[in-house]
Image (tube, rainbow, N blue to C red; front, side, top):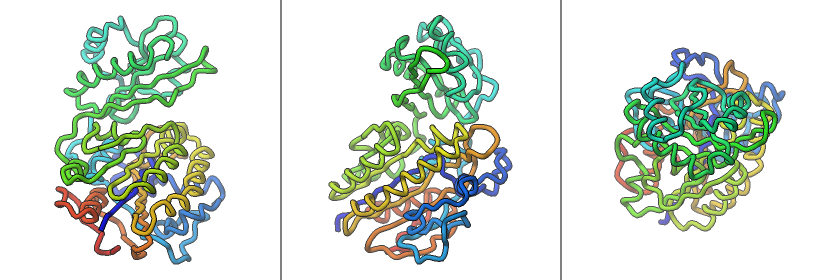
Length: 389
């Protein structure tokens, strides 16, 4: 039988602190619960119908209903709490060591090599900062000097912010390609292009032309195996960048969650067989990192309202899986990711409704996909397909 799956990753939507969260400065983090508490328990009826309230007690989300789908939560085995680590673990890669972070700025040798190889003359910043704050602080100086703004965060990222009038987008991407080569030996997870526009600090605004350059994957994973088996993989959002385009037949870029949700519905509806793999980054990028509880909840509402259309687009045999890659609790001190469990919701017209419990690894999801598509197992994870089918 032809199988098709829509896998949606709600970037940064955690569901409670992992047992080792205190090692990361995140004890007590709970992205979903804290947002719903702040909003007075406003409802998310379609998430509720899929079983979200059965995973963990959440204000305004009932656990009394008989869910349409299966539900659970997943633990992260790999050290860290960043996008690449979470997505890679889902597809079967368990990292033994976290990517390097530079809370006090990058080594001078890396910066000197970057300046020399790009010919930019100098850089601004070289410190950990919020992306929106750093362009307010240094955007004007960047316009005057034309020096790129290079900064990091609590994650393993080398970010380059440039005004589009000083560095057209392809020039910025070229800087990032050079930075990616240099960052490999420092074990930096991602280089990120951060273009912005505007005339002054009050009008500077990041554009949607962000681009991620991930470090090389250490080993083959589920997407490679799907490709070898001639199974179509369509990547939506930043998925292709996270996996360095490995195993992906088609990549669709999006500028917002809503665009990603629309593209997901369209692609899964017309797909005969294969995987549509979507990342919705707005939760994390626009709201989690900016401590914007209202914006985060509004994005959850937008997705909740899109669920009926997504479920309809599956047809008779399609399967919907919803999860996340890490937490980003907007009520928590700081502006960085939080080390959390991630929710797991699975729906299909012909699937059972089951409590999938607490999964030992994000890789359980990838192993289940390997089972669904009847390919060889991936290197890690325990499938829950038999519980559903």
